[in-house]
Image (cartoon, rainbow, N blue to C red; front, top):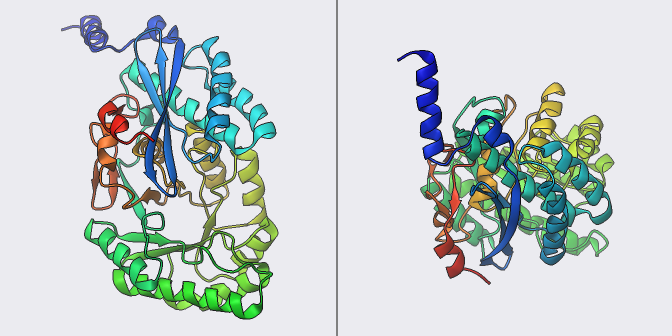
Length: 393
């Protein structure tokens, strides 16, 4: 078969499978948006977008944890009107409009933008018959190492409770576990004895998890900015015996974090709540952390994640996407992470539900703590409506 015949046969096959190409793909326009809510646990629901087009293709995105779901959905529909005037390939135009809204409405607008942007990349991949990672430069890896965030699923908050959930994660195949052992502790303005009591309780939880997972696996600690500069500087010394993979977000503002980073012997990480390249530029310039953690839902989407990663690469800083997200959000981050030279590890919210993998079709694939990125077009998923209906609020 000559080259032209082969190409015609290939394109005909793609068209038969529902894929577009050439001028046909370039002309696809957005028709509408579904906002779907899924009940998870006390830590919050998942909010998913499903974008429809005039070509019959659908794209999906994760818009969870804005903590202002109604406002976020309204902003998404507002941004959608601008998207409808363009094609599924006009990401930068959406990014420009979304950045304007984010300056006014903060996180709700950032999540709305990020969710829509994920949908558009999913649509592009499906229209072209290619996984999203091919649109971002191709894969350096297709097994994405994940750490098990056990914080959202640990109901019993004493050392034994954290240790039990860490053991469960290890038995499920993870070789890295994260906890937030200082949640609920006294404010820094409380009497010193109360602050010390709660700090010691947090350290005891860390010690229990380290013992549970053993010396060869990684332990990550998120301090959720509970400390001031003085107590943060003391904390890094007290945590040295536990050989942490990283210590995350000890204190605000950036100046405090940078001072603590300079003093810490273990790696530090953070940046989950920052938006866009400008937010991370200030973070990197200040030397706030050793590892940056943009969140696919808060940071501006896949393209913004790639841009932040490139900026961090130039600064010699690894990137580890934050995201206690649904399978949709995790796969969106994984598609970009597959392409990044400075990728380190991806967050995976472990133990929140027994039905997590069935939220999408085909079911989410996680083997030995590695999220598998397949060859299916777009994100590689469609939503499982039966599971969504079963767990709608």
